[in-house]
Length: 223
Image 1 (cartoon, rainbow, N blue to C red):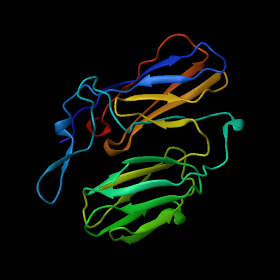
Image 2: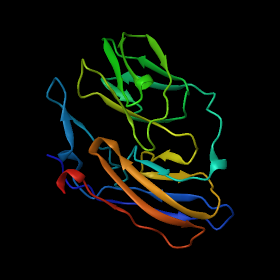
Image 3: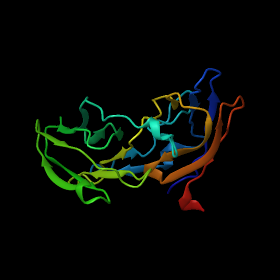
Image 4: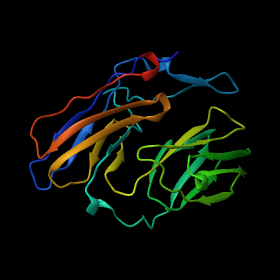
């Protein structure tokens, strides 16, 4: 059973020019209600909540309509998505178009990696044996559409890859905090997403600004 997810995102606008967006995403419910069982019957969490400040890890925060000059070259660093202890780590990845991603397997058992994006080049299914590396890059989907990653051998193993052309997309850390890069003054749409529970919220922000913005997200499956 999925519970109602209440996330309050507080956005603070810096005084300097251009401003940056800093915030915190937290969960006001019982995360034990949002789990999936593995083959041993162990409940694995679908949401990771900090025990002290209730911050939510791996929430995607991005500017939907950034200025054209915000586009940048793809990263030269290779991102790694590992299969470890029958999970994908990291659980959510933000990449640039055609950025190389290494899929690795640190477990002592076989997995597979299946990507099922809408773009034809974002679809693949490969065997993932221990110590093997499979390198892949992704094309842009529609803005904000994640590419689901799965292991068919262990169906509770899920991951997500978001592809953005610009740098104004970040993940919350273990404490639910995030900082977006500085951006020119203007009116923007800020999007907050949590793909595992299909939660998404949009809000309009005007930069520069001095007052915080609160965003409430609810599980769409309950509406």
